Image 1 (cartoon, rainbow, N blue to C red):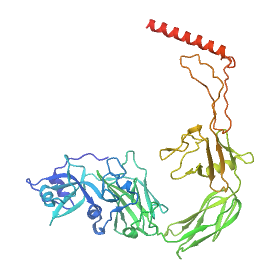
Image 2 (cartoon, rainbow, N blue to C red; image 1 turned 90 degrees about the vertical axis):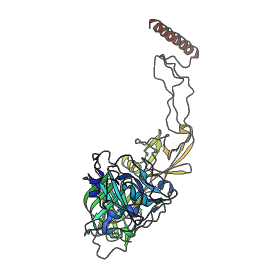
Image 3 (tube, helix red, strand yellow; image 1 turned 90 degrees about the horizontal axis):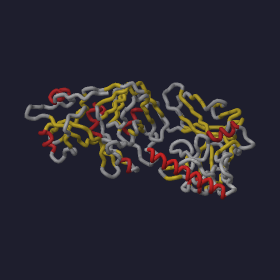
Image 4 (cartoon, helix red, strand yellow; image 1 turned 180 degrees about the vertical axis):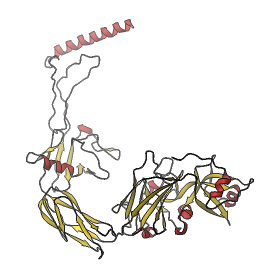
Length: 491
């Protein structure tokens, strides 16, 4: 990683994109400023500079998560619902800072020179911010994974093969394309946990109801990204790439659900471009021609038809569909989900692989995918400690009464399970002859109506004779006390 470089202010000013006229009487001072997105990116984008909007969000809590260590550290907001820009280190002369007066972008002085910063000049009372001054910019060999199917817009890029300790709290991000254009991205709507997502005008709303600003990203469709530049508190990180952004369109595909096993179903693809060279794919066991999907010996479940452009110009289009059955190949026994009596192991395994939802009383929980709650563990046993958003799924633990409705993709009928409180055995437990004793020894299972208590220690007193048990307990306690007293005297 970068080494801290103490460089005289005059030398740094020489390399600035907007150089300062520095004299001995007017040296640079360092601090941070709240810089609106448009001004922060202006020098970074060069000829592509444009208005870069603030981000207004219905999920107001996230906008405010800008403290140290938070998701959007280094941003600033209006205190309510809008992310306005970036808090970033700057270098400015005292004279220029004085010229800004009260409109000083919330300047906060730093004791030491930062590793990277923007220089600020002032003309006619207006501040101009340079590109980031970075003595040691980095180039990292990261992977670039592009998805054209995302809930957060039309495209999403994930940077893979990140080195240990890689900081994803970027101050900003840019994409530079082969045609010489530069695109800038903002937090929350575009930059999220190190990923970069955007809309180019096809998907205009994300899952929380936020409207996506797509106008400045329309030109990315059909272009090739050559560089992804991350701006961090330590300066630039450049990722070289050759990533084509395929063209998306309003077209859609719909596939009809059908019976599992052997058969066929139909699909319709609407508004596909005339020059789209269609190539179809589902999974093993499927054969696809225009408008028809045939299959042989296929288990119930969710499947996806993908249509891709063999010429590579356009993005894929896809649609999920179900192959269904009325059978329920699992049951609940001995505290877990197991194979039903009339099912094969493969059929039961397929049901468990396709678990989609578990309803506990009136509350439904996702059993797979985003926000899944592990109500069953890896052995398919009931997990009474399961939590969802820090709330217990089973408030009374194993002592409660619950109704579970377990659903799986491709299975029309859910499995319903009634859970009764686990009974506590009333048989007197054997007395332990060690220094530590337990009040009871109970074996319980999650099986709703069966609780057993057993003792296989042949040397233990018969629990049916309370007098003998009590006598043995008194003798054991006395013996233990005598041993302890003798040890204390020896010490």
